[in-house]
Image 1: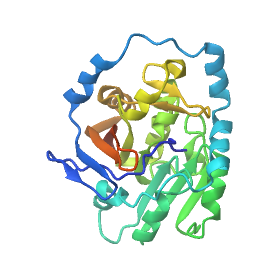
Image 2: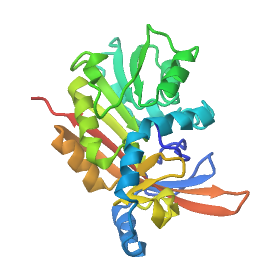
Image 3: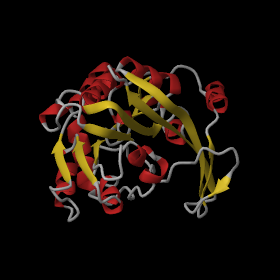
Image 4: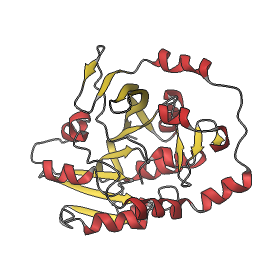
Length: 291
């Protein structure tokens, strides 16, 4: 499961200057005050989608994601070759160079993150799961899916115990990259607690997702609003847009320590149409507290 937006651009580095990159965008460090000041641009209270329709969307969430992958197969997202560069913990959490890194990708989609990692890293084992059975099938059919190096399974992070497929406290690092935003905010804590149980003490969750006032958020019509910062797309998939405080509170309550939590802002330029749009992502790193 991964959010259907143009999220495959590499992360903006934590720098204070603007930098042109090869994807046609301008990247710079997120400024919390600048992001939060946009609250003033937000209009009045929007009417919410009816409770009946919201319950229907929740019931049909898996079906809607399966239909998304039926339409787009493996062609929608670009491979994330930036993951190991941006999240150095994928290397530094090893106690020795010979140690095999055990990674969980929660919400693997069709494998755009795990397969570049498996090609770059020889000494790694990946557990990969997704809400959509169709997405899982695409991963299993990929020639790079070697059972000696990865285990792939279908899972609803909010109710299926990861320990049915992963030994407890065995994972060095877990990724939540454009995944948590697709889960109802009332159930996000369940997903994080589930991941907490399979992480080693001192293990890290590497997070990236949509931030408040991202361009994708501002494109939604009033009739698409489900709750504060939570919207439904035309295809029935949903997206939440995170604030730093909300994200930090989620992980703190689940037994994590925050080591990084910052907005990453980017201007993406469509040269053909002459458009420049503001993207806002939230990037975080959270360590499981040793009991």
